Length: 208
Image 1 (tube, helix red, strand yellow):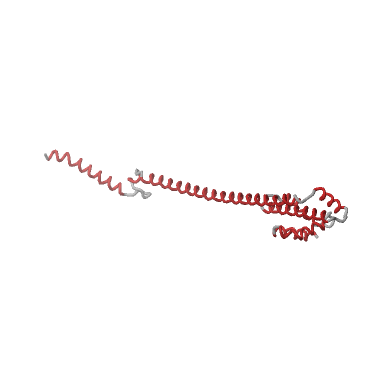
Image 2 (cartoon, one colour; image 1 turned 90 degrees about the horizontal axis):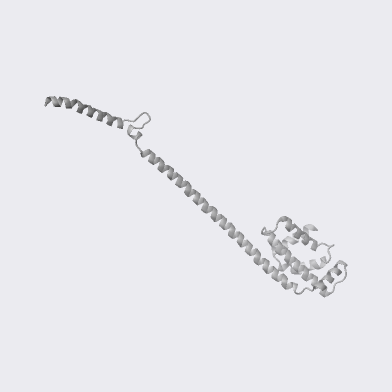
């Protein structure tokens, strides 16, 4: 029995010594502060993958939120544009209806004779003078409609310049029937938009 114990004891002692050294090595940090056990552990790899996934998720969430905000902004702009376009169309329709109604009182033959007399600086009859007044009021209402479109960006500066020239020409002394145009403006401008009236009066004053 002593012989068997003598053979078994050195092997058992060696195994215990190896286990002790292995346990010490597992707890002992290496040069870079990492234990042998942590070198073969998958926990840091899993943690790194999780952090990458979290960062990607944050960026995706941020991108989605930015997309929502941009979409809302575009929607607001589109609604405003549609509102302005609807307002312009409604106002244009109302103005055109009023012009069509006034045009019923215009006799083309009488108006043509009145214009010819105005060019020749001849005296106008009451009917001819009235025809010219209606004609100029229709012009002013048309200019007001175009002015509103210009204010809302429908017309360019170049397009509006042509109408601006027509307004100036209406009040110039050398223009045929300018007295009738001025008289018509004086008695009808209260029917027009205050912004348009102020604009025309400033335009005429600067042109003097």
